Image (cartoon, rainbow over all chains, first blue to last red; front, side, top):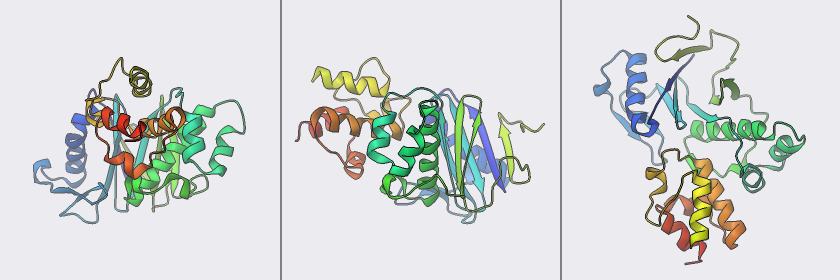
Length: 183
Length: 71
């Protein structure tokens, strides 16, 4: 089971710490100030007192999202918009296979780039190694641990050891602005 | 130097930056993709390769400029 929380945020960087505490306190039913959160040497936050609760957070300029699971998890979100440096970044940092996937057709290259990019980010965040893991050393196209979906103008990827299926509401609990999207 | 600041501003999607700008903390919309774009720009424009671990140690726009100048 993966719990996903999404919220609009005017200042995601300032809210990131608050947001993490809020979603964890909702999940664990404990006071947010009692949560002892530390970071690994690679910068991945973890709960000292709940080693079997895994969480990860991502933000854009105006949106913040978090995922909590009983398995290691990584989440990444990007706003879908044209980005002038995509092609160069892909050439320099993505695998040949991923580049071929992105550029084999002229339409929707930006979208396919973001699909691959968010999958990469979710993977390294799941692995807990941050940017220490060189992006061109692993391929994310056929990795069953990673799933990607779209919500409005945002693209999300999640990497988890759990079997996950976006269409299966037994796999997910969504919380958007404190209200389940299924309600 | 002006051209460098212009290129950085374009990647960071802000009107202007200075050498003192702490790009990770001062840029509201900072994300790692912008970092990768900066690495590509420095490679293309200044023929200097910055690897990711080195980039992670840079803090200000001035730090990037010094790397781009080969210092």
